[in-house]
Length: 66
Image (cartoon, rainbow, N blue to C red; front, side, top):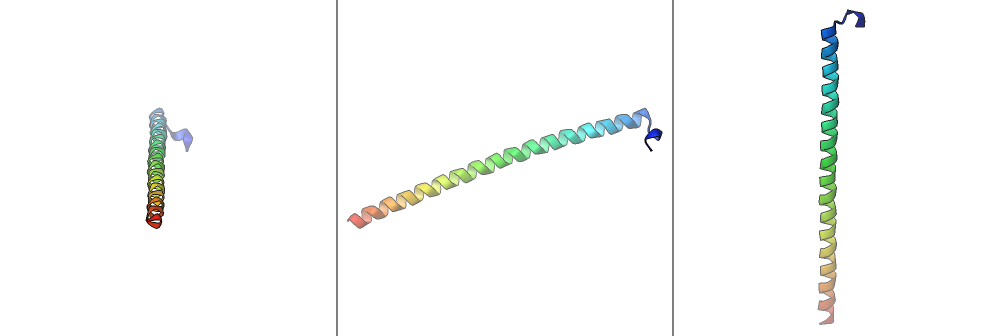
């Protein structure tokens, strides 16, 4: 099978392999970027919920004191 391949065929195979590696690296970097965005958004939402709970607790403390 491999003995029948010409130099041009080997070159095409090499170019295809390089292209696959580049695509995989690109997709891997895009996935990591998206994961960082999701983690940042979740951290922000957690912070906002924490602030809301703190404000609600603070407001209810003032209501109870009145």
